[in-house]
Image (cartoon, rainbow, N blue to C red; front, side, top):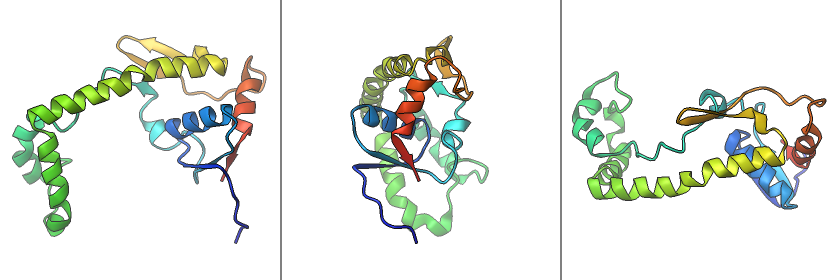
Length: 171
């Protein structure tokens, strides 16, 4: 068993959110431990194709889905397919989902998401500029993506990015 390690901040998950959080905290002088059993960016962040969807503020739970819910729950191929043996465990979640899918809650949730997403792209633009890898951020219509490629040590700005990553311990 490894000796226990004490750090100021531990972040579980080396996806894009974990890495961005770790880099920001490290830039502020915090000691950060990044915990992930796999290579950074190889989990869920790999599967989203680097899309920054600042326009996607409509919650999944909304009146249209609520109207389709009975069909979705009874269709065994649906992502909402009801697992009857788990009924009592899932019922509280379903009640909350229904409440949050009502028109007033959907509006409030969409406004909250829009507020969060409004700051997302400017924050990414600032971060890639600081790391001198702004060419990895591309605007394609209504979406923006980060081009997935490694940062070569010979690439301009890689030193700054590497220094930021070097101050983050990986477990």
